[in-house]
Image (cartoon, rainbow over all chains, first blue to last red; front, side, top):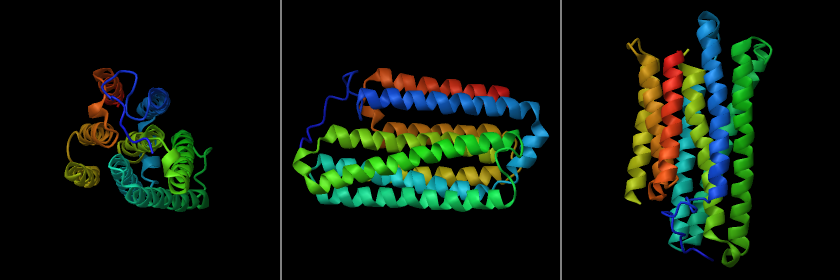
Length: 193
Length: 77
């Protein structure tokens, strides 16, 4: 396995690769602009957004934050172990990362189910249009992230000699991006209105 | 390896701090909540994503995005 780290100080080789970082910035700008738009509309209809926000369960959001941050922690540990040629340990941490990602999705499903049962769908009001659009788009990213990590784990188990560190780092960067997006979504959607 | 454990502990503490602030009647709660979110964002990107080892251009881009985003949110709200 190629585990010699590239020179990250070189502007063309950020950790995870330049292509992944271009994707990360595009995603951050997309979610960022949508959140700014949400806050803008929230400033025009303060009462509606405040009352709608109270219909959300912030505890679900907080627990999901713990799930994602902890999964990011194990992802970082997995990359560290891989750099030290500890493939078995790296794979174990990848499994933990994916498990916590699945925990996030399970809790999100419970939350979505309760909202649908209460009739709080996308057309309920403007707040819930933003809520569904932003959180569902984020959930899609988490699902894609788990698939990427699953493929990385499979490749590491099957033929570790053929796996390159930069590929695992790119998958890790994508996973951390899901974390970063959630760190912006959670306080704005669940807390500040 | 130890440093990353400390960072995780710090992130958990900040998450609980957010829960505390949002459940209280503290003045400027929104400012505190966004401030904590910015801090967590920096910790994840610089430590977990190892941005601290990257060329300074990438650091400035992330910090620039974060600064503009937080300023816009706090200005509008």
